[in-house]
Image (cartoon, helix red, strand yellow):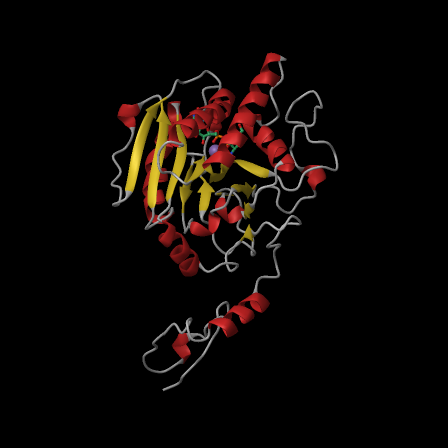
Length: 316
Ligand SMILES: CC(=O)N[C@H]1[C@@H](OP(=O)(O)OP(=O)(O)OC[C@H]2O[C@@H](n3ccc(=O)[nH]c3=O)[C@H](O)[C@@H]2O)O[C@H](CO)[C@H](O)[C@@H]1O
Ligand SMILES: [Mn+2]
């Protein structure tokens, strides 16, 4: 027999080289203090795991999932997710919902709000106990930009309605994506945004912010922290409500002056998050893109946009 002590974050030896049966016994309780100190030392150095305003940047290896889950289990939280499946985007819904069952807040109370113009086409996905699917009708539109941007207004209204019931956190997600790995309590915070996988290594001068000062989404040269995704953001209801309301209003006020920001509500989101710093930032593990080759610092892909033929699925 060989007795082996290892610490959190330390790689276990290749078991194939050890003869006999291997038993892995967690001894977290007994060696907590020692492990914790060690964990800090062993924390990842190949990525930035905290922002200059001291918000965590969540990467695999920077958190303890079991520990985090136990904290939030005690609080008996409910997490809502919104997803829009309008027009031909309804085809993405089945995979989205099925993979969410496997990876999104497993073991917690979850309410998925589906907004669609075709309620009868919503796939019947089996939901685990404590998880619920709510289908809401929305109008289609001739322009994909409008479908995408109008989400902010609908999210705003939904939150106003939800404040009366027991939802604690909300995430607003793109439908043309799938979960591949855990997305759980490590992502919870007051205001949460995801770093766009296309720009996380770039200097901010290259970020595709709205650059026309006449737009309310304008970000000046030399401003901006990260380029965040429009396809995933969240937080507590009050914070996400403030964000959705502001982005919706600024988008509409721009429209009245004949301006549409470069990336619609994503541009407004980026402006908002420059002025209102997120309390937690999620790494591109939380919204990768299937067409992108995986980089070595991305140890886990949790949620990723599928490859799609824009001409096939968009109305314009
Ligand atoms: C991964 C990511 O960050 N994606 C963002 C990006 O482009 P994307 O190319 O990912 O945008 P997209 O075509 O996926 O549209 C965004 C979302 O709007 C919904 N939809 C859109 C068109 C349609 O006909 N039916 C429909 O239901 C659907 O939920 C879709 O996921 O920039 C957009 C700017 O406008 C949005 O900010 C997206 O969130
Ligand atoms: Mn998308």
